[in-house]
Amino acid sequence: LKVSVIGLGYIGLPTAAVLASVGHEVVGVDVNADVVELINRGQIHIVETDLAGLVQGVVSEGRLRASATAQPSDVFVIAVPTPFKDGNEPDLRFVEQASRSIADVLRPGSLIILESTSPVGTTEKMAAWLSELRPDLAFPHESCAQPDVNVAYCPERVLPGSIITELVKNDRVIGGMTLECSSKARRFYETFVRGECFVTDSRTAEMTKLTENAFRDVNIGFANELSLICDQIGINVWELIRLANKHPRVSILNPGPGVGGHCIAVDPWFIVHSAPDVARLIRTAREVNDGKPLWVVDKVMKAVSDRLLVAERAKVACLGLSFKANVDDLRESPALEIVEALAGQGAAIDIMVVEPFIEHLPATLEGKAALAQFEQAVAEADIVVLLVDHRAFKTIDPSLLLGKVVVDTRGFWQ
Ligand code: SAJ
Image (cartoon, rainbow, N blue to C red):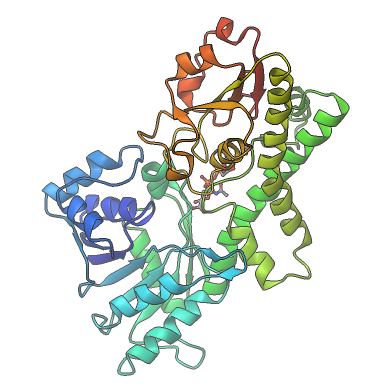
């Protein structure tokens, strides 16, 4: 099939590459000219396991190419961001732009699939926008069971760091606007997905995606709340969770410095926004998780104050900046939020940041912290703050930590 993937980010690019690798003729479309040029040279702009080789292979074989404009295709997969605008409402601007960008090249028989995490009703909205732009084509809606163009929602569910594997292995939920839309979309996914494809309507599929991430957020919120309680009453939360999880029906997640990334820290708000009066637990979990970075900052600042009683400056090594282990992604990272807050304290603190996945500190930390090498930073520090459980930090020589205050937000060295 000829497939256009709109948006070549963390989801779109791996999806385009996998589609090309199973034999589809794929055009990746992105508004960023640098990204288009880079991909056409067989290179990539993100760090993701096995992605570089895959893209290089399919580009050199001529099965994937990037373009700034959409091309006529059998299938259009839309994978663009859906931010939560200024913390107030879902921002569908990019879905709208993507719809505009494909409107001209649609033809009878085209299948459009939205993969972006979206508030319930977005797929219907997208069909309505397209219908306005292309009055000559019949789009699916309540009174049109036999549309010219098929529209479905099929959320991505892949875990950053394992995207290529999960794209193929995971089950998919496919929500067509009509039964025909669902079956067409299902046949398309079955060309590269080895998991099962479950069919439903578009609204249920949209809510399924939001529910999955809200479920994880609520469960991490539970673990984070436990960590605050345990800290207050003097119990080791890691030991507690390990023991509670010995129960056959208990499976508590890990407390951490907060919840980051552009999915779990954002998507539950879509649910809260659509049903604010009843989404109480989901909202509270968001608040608990969003409060955790400041709690960590307070812990570190307490250690800093103690140090400043006996020394002129406190040296703090912050281990990790990314939003989770073994990725380079700093979006909504609680680790970054914590380091920025520490750097803004105005106290006599020297901050060393260790982040193996980046070469330069983000602009917000420039001149306020120094990028350092792991062992050296730990050796020099008075206070060591473990923020991200990167594999590279596991093999620490325990003697390096002797005599230092350790704030291990992930229970990594327990
Ligand atoms: N975290 C904890 N404790 C845990 C697990 C995670 O503090 O026990 C933190 C992480 O450190 C990170 C954040 O939560 O800051 C989110 O990380 P994650 O690994 O749970 O999830 P993401 O954001 O990388 O990917 C999620 C996945 N969703 C679910 O697991 C339900 C993925 O399958 C989705 O495709 C992705 O969101 C998405 O794009 O929506």
